[in-house]
Image (tube, rainbow, N blue to C red):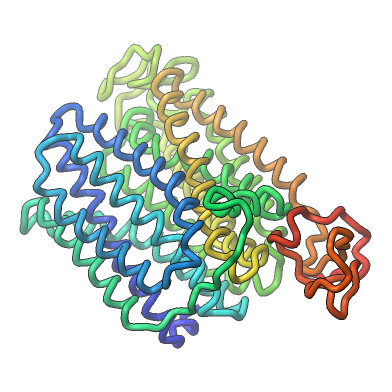
Length: 483
């Protein structure tokens, strides 16, 4: 996997990604402490609103920027976004009002929504061989997982020496280092693309490409699976561990660590796996695995796992007679919940993390395969936006259902969403998914350059673009070359 780091350009880009991720992790911790300083007991409201603003910025900004990305030098655009993010990070310690936090968070996340898809679209051009690109995707997944484990530990170490305001300085330093690393290499020039319909058509093109390409429609359904199951993990783990299972705060980290360990393990193994099996063969079963695991866990919660006992709500859940820290009816107190149930949670989170990586990591290969080089920025921006739209739906659903109806209901509802999305992915992704498709152009004149030497009906690597606005009807596979 590390062989791709011999490529100097990619090595600098990957290092830039890592240091920026560490900076982002420090900012997450610092922002929580800043929110508490400004809002006290209402800090959770501030953070919840900030997360919503983050998702709105992600969903709305990426497609708009993609409309102009082909006109801007990539290196200049990436560095400008790093400078913007560093500037916002340095400003955050000086805010005195909650609304100022919201404005700065929107600017920070809008810059990230510009940086990330541009970065993702650059990597496949730097590493054109699919084998190398697959290894780069695994490294990127590994970087995200390691950041989620390393950044909180680094933040805790720094907070033992300095006040939390200095964490924002570390965030700015991470973004500044990222900018320096990007400046140090030459990046491929964007290829200008002419599209009819003005700025709106350009902004909407990536989404249209996704919705018109069968494998990308399936990928969007799989992203919804990840969001539905992942929201249960990321939103409700703390309640499950502390209230339902009555365990210590340190065990929250252990549970989330199991989720991260599963993801990292698969990320390390994926390059070898994908050398042997296709994306569809790996990703669809992974979706059903994570759905089944969450469904089984929901069943266990409904059966009375934890300190609440069968047929009762657990501590902190609606209808429960015991508050946090008190034993449920007829059961032992916190810390004495069924150890098998606790072990089941760790195994479930490990399997969900593994399946998550098996879906997310190869996703970049599908996007790359489904768009021509000039359209890669629009395609990656569309995936960035649509994926976060899925999370914008499932994050509040996971929290609201858990608070109002209980964790078992929340897990059950998210399982239903994940199952429906998994079945949709199977239906949307054809079993035979060739790269080259036979198709006809009756609308083009015979002397059109696209038909030169080929004729009106021909076969080539098929992508949705200005000349190919619709996916051709399914054929028996004659004249098609498998991906």
